[in-house]
Image (cartoon, rainbow, N blue to C red; front, side, top):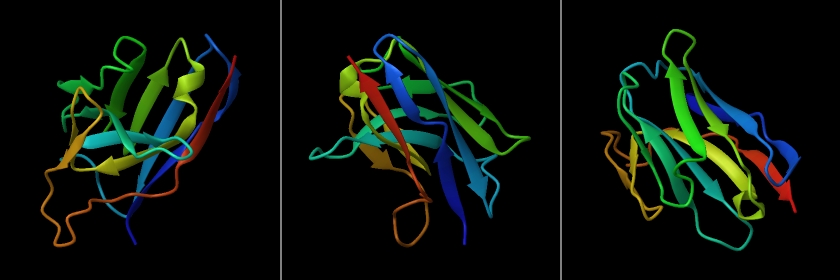
Amino acid sequence: RSSCQASGGGTVQAGGSLTLSCAASGFSLENLVMSWFRQAPGKAREGVSCISSNGNVTYYSDSVKGRFTVSRDNVKNTVSLQIDNLKPEDTAVYYCATDYLVTEDGGYLYIGDDHAGKGRWGRGTQVTVSS
């Protein structure tokens, strides 16, 4: 079963940094748009960032722009999210997935072609930011 597993979360103080990693399992992400999402307790899922298949084009939601940097390594079949200047409002479970465009307002649009229209997801990683 193919999936994307996020890792690298933890508890950090405000202003700190983390690097999250997303490992694709059971498929190659080489030709896919890859995306990051987060979901805080009691809140809807929010699109955070996406990156084109070759890594040349990236998008970020306004809430993270300038602090988050997405990158990918198609040889290692991974995607990374560098998070700097963490804020308490960044506290959430972070997920990666395939085939979503992320918009500036945190929305997202599925652009893949699987019949379920959902892309590939997996286990998220918890990021907790203390003030």
